[in-house]
Length: 598
Image (cartoon, rainbow, N blue to C red; front, side):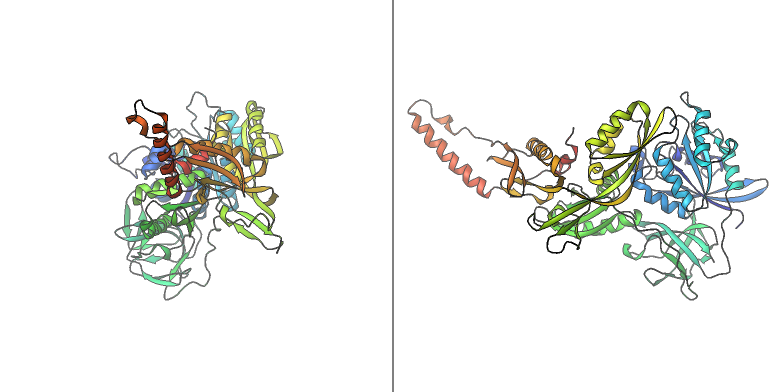
């Protein structure tokens, strides 16, 4: 046990975590030349295409240092704020963390929030200054920033370049010398923490765990404490690049377990595995339940695929524990699910993974957040509003509260004005402004979560030329003046396009929604009125004009009344059509509402 080290790599987006993991794998000869490729641990096509890490990846390396063999269990984590739940789970399975900071970009908001996560779990932090080979790097200045942040000495910061391989040996040496060996008692009953799982169509659920006490053997009878069910350990092993079966995984080590479970709901991330005959008495404290920030409906395009969609979602939830969903139905779209996500990128990735990995074509409704409504009848009783259609009637409504967040934005001082005006436009109130250095400013705002859901992050990057970094934490509910804006097509309400908006923005957004839908809805044989309404009051209207056949083409010459007769006949037909006509809404229309500023 004294030769095992468990550590993860944490950093802001694009600070070089995955590349550093590649170099560590090269240095420990874990991968052969044939297997080498860029971002080796990013196994999903999506990750490779976008150049981001979505899933944390565990891998075991072996390294000889001063004549002794060490086992290093590394977890590479995502950097984006939407996947911070992955990071918190990785941190719980480790004793130390490499905090990577880009020498050209210095400390960013996500660096700080990931660092706090690690410190809460008492991890040993090893600061690594990456990309020192870049011409734009400022190693001295950034080292001072790291020293200020961590309170360490400048000698403890390791200068490195994951691209060229500078400093990799020093990092491995620091991992072995500074990170403590795992604690645990091999003689106690088995106690292992599940920190991740994947669904394999041939072998069922593969569970990734870390043994805290005791050991787990192949063929052992084991028990999952959250569900109370017993299974046989068909195969256990360690996570190399490919899985390596072993006879036993001992205290302090990380491995995988296959029990042949086919039902995705039986495995819970954060659960404790123990021996079925001599179970441990105390469960490990799991991870805190994830708090979804953004809610959206996901519906199958064909209603018959509903059960298939449910199975796909359950398998996906195994691999991404931060996804939460429950069944709901909509008048316009039939049966589907109300899903909670950690942010807009998370929503986008889930939608793409459903399409790629499970061949499910889905329709996503307009995302929104969860509100608290209070009625005049019971002013103290909370009505949870996850969907605009759950909002009580305006006549019975006492007040509505919406979730607020504390947003921390770190940017260059020249962009402070732009960032402030963007936040104030989004109903934010500035609470603090601190100059970290003469160049870099930290701004704190209290903002409604609903305002940052749609395009805030993209616009923040635009106004700051990519230099602003953003992190947020929920601070509770506050009363707000909200109204429900409905969209009516051909006088029928489309519940999937309804939105809860602040009264000041309702007219403007309603008008823009109508204009956007007019572009996207294909023309029919009849006029389609598109209206935005608050209650019974119409606040905006656009019309998609009908496609018209020239019925008067055969009349040349003669009396005008002949033409008029044909036109009147056509008009009657259009009227009848409009009464029974059904308007098909393309998928782009649901998502276009998010991009009203384009």
